[in-house]
Length: 392
Image 1 (tube, rainbow, N blue to C red):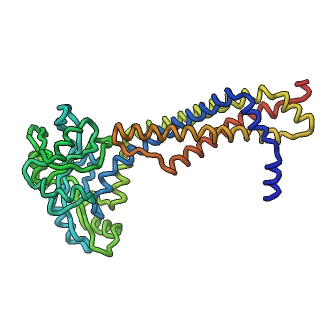
Image 2: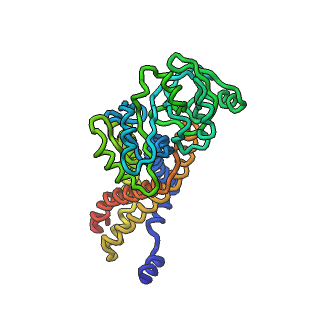
Image 3: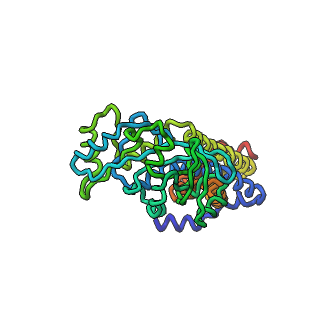
């Protein structure tokens, strides 16, 4: 190993010297790789924000097991099932409580601009908190009042004046389902790809807004277990005990996965981001190949001279691969920095949870290395074909 390192340090960095011989060409090459990396990072960032925003509400729920309708597709399109299933669930060993949650996608008028927005509204029993959200739990008394709700301050849209007035203790009125309601409190979750924000209220207020939905038909059942019981085992018992025709039983992990899979597999938007990342990868391959191919052509006589001096193809291929790795690393760094800046701008403008992660950066760096090595492999074909007899 030490011998290999000594040989490496003694070796003349021909790849670096060839790339930097023409500074402008080298800068253009780095820019091209950075652009390809930026495309991949942005597409994967949007995809990550899509999946993260889709389950942020789910992750804040305190329940261990969830009961939903088999017809439910995602949080914005939840079908109903009989509330009596919760009473039956209480008979299963290990179940501590079973609470209903009402969920619907609602159109409301922005009190500030009067524009119509789609928000997710959640109704629940204020005496039985279901969220791990201190902001919500400290304001449960407010939603016990008739026609009042809590508003997500991170909702997509212009709500500066609304937030200021509510923070000042002034109720803000608007309209939902042709009914005047008051915003008496704030909390923070954020927008998602299924809705521009969230609203929370009591189940009584929810049923007043949606009079066509009876109290006996709920959207989500929240099962909390006694200490020491395994959610997976209790979920299996619930599946065996409850009628299968109108309910689906999921642990919290599977409930989150259920929502993710909807956006990943059933909606085209998840696939679109994958295609965008693949296009960025292909663009990078083309750019790097053009750079390396041009460099090989301009130094073809030098490669032929090396062959005439006795150097084998392996030595010459290492030079091209060295150039490919330099381009990969040198192009990745500016692409990463610019994408972090774009993430910040997008997050501030949309309130979507988009941020750089180590896993995503590593994924794109690995893709960049593969991209550059593949380009280098194709470019080396010309090096192998170089014949000193043809050059001189």
